[in-house]
Image 1 (cartoon, rainbow, N blue to C red):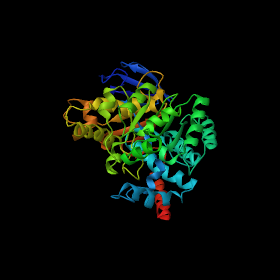
Image 2: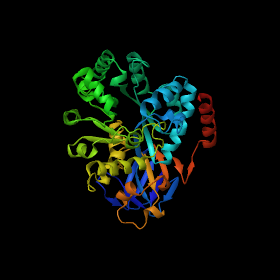
Image 3: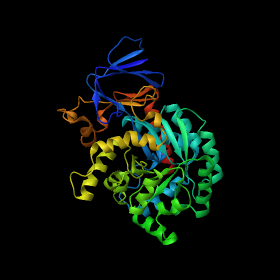
Length: 418
């Protein structure tokens, strides 16, 4: 059993209240929250006034796309995707995915992220890498006209939801513009069969949304709704170019808008109407997207950009409260990914935790800790990341893995692909 003591605790169970409670972890679970009392511990961690809080969850990413980090920067979207990314992706094999994903996993841990919602290929190899590294992975189906299939999606859904306690799987497909109507209808039938939510990229760019309206006289959100894809919920990655009718569907179906501010800004895709979503009671989660388009896998940068871009978009410095975005990157992302047992610090919940180092200049003097995490925080403030009760990152070191070996193997893959 591990005891955290002598610190600050943000459970997120009671809004932004911060206490000085002890927190005990036994196995993968939180077993005690309260005042100091006797116990038998394998390790006692003196927080020295630092903040223990639920870990961040990355609600949209393509982990293995670390191969494209700064490989195709400062290019228009179409050229970036079709001339640079797609040709390399055609060369990828399962072993590449295994090695490239591990680099992303280490970056998640160093950003206080305990879980990722990943849409990519070769899930067997990525699941193996995830379990070996100790991080949680929720897979999202990646069906399109060109890759995967509905039959394979069902096989993955059944198999990976029984694979390991760190692994789960959600129905999904790439996007409307890469997926035929007949395939989407078949996925809607799967959703009905399993009473399961469905996720996909949607409304990422203005052109994508306009072309969908051209094809169906409906936005992506509206055609998905018509096809019955959202009868059991789900969500859409990016959700930038959405209209009022779309937001009504989000609210009606309890859908998740998964915001990827850095990627959307870097690729000039646009700024999602997050403030309007919040005002309309739409569920918000936060993701980094992949390292080929972001290029960092850094939750601090995402939270900051979401907030400040809303202020510019709405020309209102009061737009979008930082605390709402902190909750979206933790509680929201967890619930979006189906990780309801990892959302807050509470007895019986999974011990997916992070420690924020408040003894850094960017956290001093202490006025409002939670807002300062969003507006001033950075990865330098991640002192520890715990997943399922295991400390995987602490004081700048990765526990149980050879980081240099992971970097070396990923570099070999990247060199071959180029």
